[in-house]
Length: 276
Image (cartoon, rainbow, N blue to C red; front, side, top):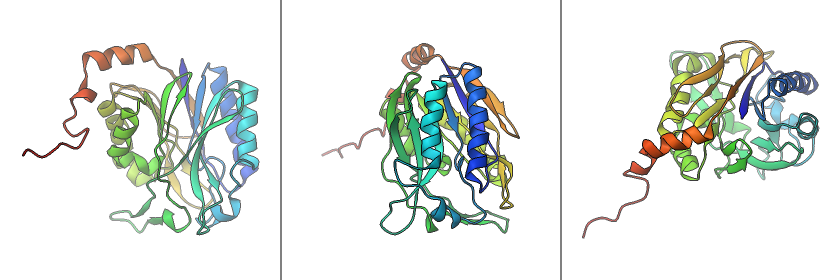
């Protein structure tokens, strides 16, 4: 089985972004991928953070969702759609929703990004407050696919290992991390975080990313990669638009988990009763 991570440079024009995504999904399918993952904000990256409120789609219908269903059917491909802004929050904020479509074009899962990027970058005049316009999700999502059991996450989630412990504890074999990392944090931490999540959970990690300079002036780090369960980078794309495809071996993963049972050795997997 082969998985693909797609790297994009998205902007505020949804039609242009979807055309870019289609081209790269076709390339992934031609290279034999059964599952392809798009980056965070693949369908829309506005000039201002507040623009996502106007671009938000209703859950179940809209240009991005219609495109994803059609592309999955056309290519016979499972698609992990980085994030799509979905309306519906009681307070007017949107959800940063990672949507999963099977090869028939049916939506089979939705994960709303839990950890929101509210930070001031150390040593730089660069701040973000994602929670001003995005409502956090509250539920982890794991689902079965022809490419193994998938655990969903988005970007800033990768800094919170307890989420991935929950996903691997629920049987995840492949962790998805669609992202739009800033260049300073990407340079400092991106590869380290991805490989750590792979190693500590003995999981494959698929991390599609935004890359380059966007119309809003923001620069994203790129370096989309696929990492195996031993922490080895199988494929990567440092910069630019494109896709990387790598085979996975779930049988070998199971063998290694059996002979190196670190997941079974967790001392704090469950709360322990205090001694009497």
